[in-house]
Image (tube, rainbow, N blue to C red; front, top):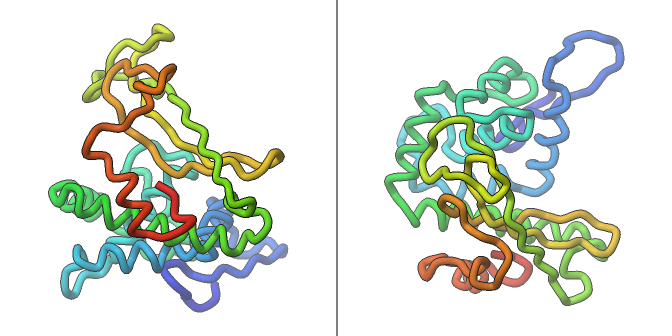
Amino acid sequence: MKKRIGSYPRVRIEGGGRAVVSQAGGVLQVETVRTAGSDTAISAALTPWRKARVVHDPGKILLDVALAVALGGDCPADVAMLRAEPAVFGAVASDPTVSRLIDTLAASGEKALWAIRAARAEARQRVWRLAGREAADAGETVTVDLDGVLVVAHSDKEDAAPTWKRTYGHHPLMGFVDHGPGGTGEPVAALLRPRNAGSNTAADHSPPPNWPWPSCRRSTGAGAGP
């Protein structure tokens, strides 16, 4: 392991079989975070929620949860897989610390959501700038694909209900930005909709009155997205 830069350590990869880690695939996610500047952006955005003399940065805690999901986790407690590999992910907060932060951010309502969205927009702006001609806005037109995605719930969760596919769960609305004819979709926004919401008409795609997409675009600048 090399010196720490940003929220995560720099990892040196060797082929000799020494110091083997079980989550080596997470190095790609960590380097993506570092290149996009997501770690510094989210850390700065969540500064108001960082208490004096705390050990774990709120921004890194959220990034650790996101990395755990990317590595196959499905709940905040799955950050344990990161905690087991400090050489790759650095110091990872305990489960109670993660839960306390989530409760604190949830209690602050829209203020925390604005901060997180602003950090994501800043990282997206940086990535699109690095992408150059391959960026989603290179042709001065940004194409957004809206799609409803069924998420199955295996127990009685809040707002879960029977879906049109005769399953049980949720039906969030997702927004993806297309990166050219041969590119892949970049997720830019998600609307967590209750029960068996539809997705086949413009009315289904309309966000609620308090959904802050237009203001978010104005406050974060060109290329920031919703």
